[in-house]
Length: 490
Image (cartoon, rainbow, N blue to C red; front, side):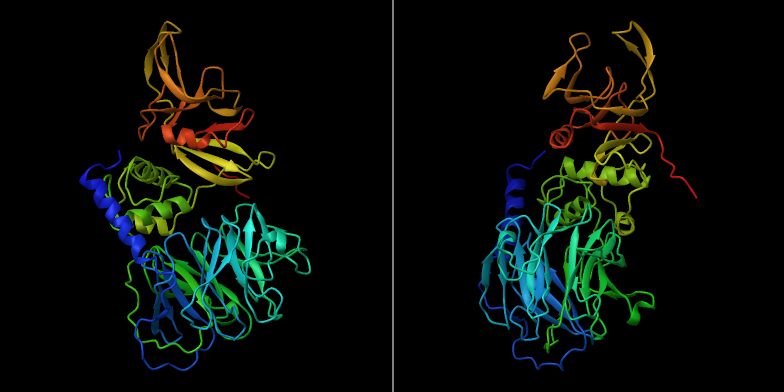
């Protein structure tokens, strides 16, 4: 339930405080310690973090010193770093997806340069023509549009090959850099934890980053960019040493919710206090509100466990997402976020699912874990909590005898659908948005979806999840029900 009265006012005050603290887009962008002596120029690149909840940027040089900049940016912005004017020094920028704006600062000037760009895209900074100036290219609809200017849309691209490049299915992040040392930047896509350079005639792999946040940079100054990661749950960067032969080294820095950047920022004062270091999140439960809840919602969403608003309210949708997280892991099925869950999330991966090359879009119901996987274009798009048959005996009015509650297992298709509530005139039971996969059993929304198997045979899911699936399911879609999938071993 949503908070009311004083609780609602408190939540609005929290949200308003966050927004107001980040709204200074045209304020001068200066170090937090004016007049501090500059340090020598950096070798290689510096790491950085953008804190969207405070609008602050923390740049960490090779010696481990911090320079704080801001305020610049707000929640929802994608942090960008690039050499916009070709002077050899990287400065800050943000892409605002909901507004379709690119906001840059050049050479430390206290002026924001605002360019229109298409909204809802995935941006990447790269010098794709080798002229020394970075531009911001944009991915939309599974394709990368390489743009040779700032603030331009795909339809205005005039590069040597304006045709868009197809991205790997499930691409969730892009990074740019000179990954082959030829003086021209390439763009790499991150999908299913793998990093792969995109090229018209075939690219090459750069490694595996898992669920961590990727960041690219020339870490050792040899002219070749490499890929590192920021692990938000451990609050640490991991970078590969020279020539990629040594094990990644961890650099503890920042806190969960901050977003990584890297760049050649030139001489930095390096006199500021580092950001607070906090790994993971504290225990939380239903009814709590605040930025830490928003961070939890954000991270659950990244793993396709949560589909609600990032509003900082630990309501039923967030509780069900935490429950689903516990179900997938096979631990105690509680609705509360526990302190040890941060450690679990740091290593979280989905279990292996059946490979069905001929079915790019389908539904998989894992009865053992009591979850449903929505698969789109061969990628997991949503992990949804369900409750299947409880296995108990009950009296069936329709059959006139005692029957056992059982969910049919096997390979089916969705054969019939109706919107809204459907009530059985014989039993009086009502189900919501039913999608039949047999004449008698359906996937449907229901008012009670416990953590354990409880239905007579249908596959129950929460009402709001049923509404969200409406745009993704269709008659004839493959629907598979199984107890435990064991992948083949070679």
